[in-house]
Image (tube, rainbow, N blue to C red; front, side):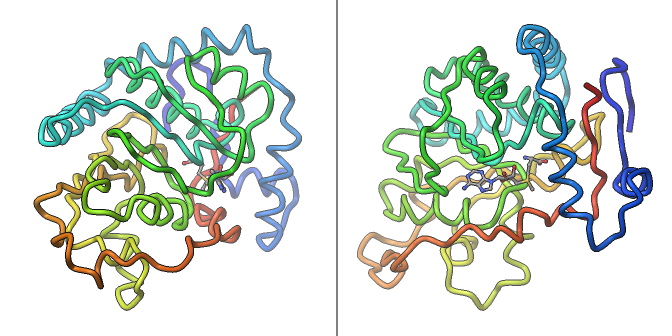
Length: 274
Ligand SMILES: C[S@@+](CC[C@H](N)C(=O)[O-])C[C@H]1O[C@@H](n2cnc3c(N)ncnc32)[C@H](O)[C@@H]1O
């Protein structure tokens, strides 16, 4: 992984655990300990750093290609994007992946001149919430666990999130007239459902009707934008409104599985040098 601006210190999981003398079975605990131990950033100093990253992001091939893919889907929808909902961004003042993803979502908001950008992640610190406000976002006051209604075209940004969050967005918008308002960037549904083909949840049910555009990850930093796709649900591709068995939604949304939050266990763990 490159260290272009000297801003990042990449700590592979192995090295970090070795340095801390931690055994493999303690690794999940150790990661959250690491994040808790991180000192708070100085918001005034951090703001220009994120601003610089946004400037670089806007010029990156990854961002430009992603915006082209999104624009195609927005044009097909024939209505402008009105909202962004970003869930599970992660501790972006403390990890490298989340920081680059924050630059992506802020740049996307600016690119489309979107007024409403809502964020939620239970790990956010007050300093991270303050930074979100400084970048024209708003932190949700409650954990909606993905239950959000897209009454207007909404870009959901959920990079590397627990399955239940994507599922519950579909669950909340499970109507032929509303689902097309959902434009979702998350881990690939194709990949996520491979091992779940026999399940009856809403991701498995929609996968054959959704348009999945993989966002090719040629970003200069690895493990930031891997395996992400843009998912859209064009009205004409969806089952007819009177297909009751399809449009009857499951009794309850899924519970967020805490264990899933550590599925990135085998990828590099990149921390920010504070
Ligand atoms: C695997 S991490 C991904 C973090 C970052 N986006 C990345 O790619 O490194 C999953 C994130 O989902 C967050 N999360 C868990 N439950 C959530 C909820 N109910 N709403 C929003 N985010 C949640 C976790 O705190 C965590 O930051």
